[in-house]
Amino acid sequence: MERITYQEVPQGMFEKLRAIEDFLGTSTIDHQLAELIKLRVSQLNGCAYCVDMHHKELKHLGEDDLRLSSLCVWQDTPYFSDSERAALRFAEEVTQLTAKPIAEEVYNALLKYFNKEEISLLTLTVTQINTWNRLMKTFQFVPGRYQVVAEV
Image (cartoon, rainbow, N blue to C red; front, side, top):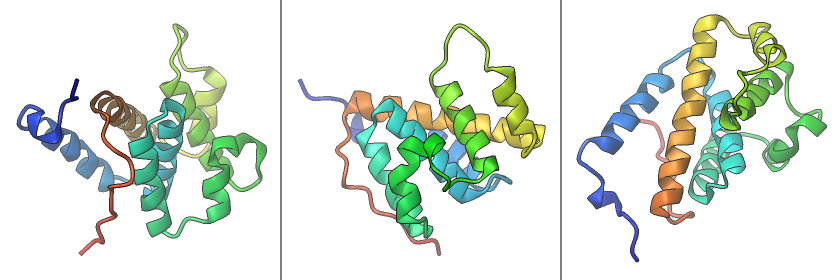
């Protein structure tokens, strides 16, 4: 059976989600860090469409190939800063929720590098990409079609 196409989604649904993306894009969160988070969460969720998209976005931003290829094992590499490590660990915890709250050590590590407003924005970044991952996997959007749009 054919999945839901872009044209069959209720009018305004993707526009509302993109409005959140626009909001996050104008926030104080570093764009490259946000894209690293989106790529890592997409890897965890197995969303091929979003992995392709955020890999391309990071390449466009000038991200290093070594960091990109080792993001899936970031904990075991020296290529990520302490603040990136804190954010990636937090993103993984939020993505892989259990019945327990986010661990204090994970939250406290974030507080070393981010204020509460930034932590709120990081949380929204993680929950937003989780939403996109679930939509793309459900609708089975085909990876490889995404093209980076150069900013005007």
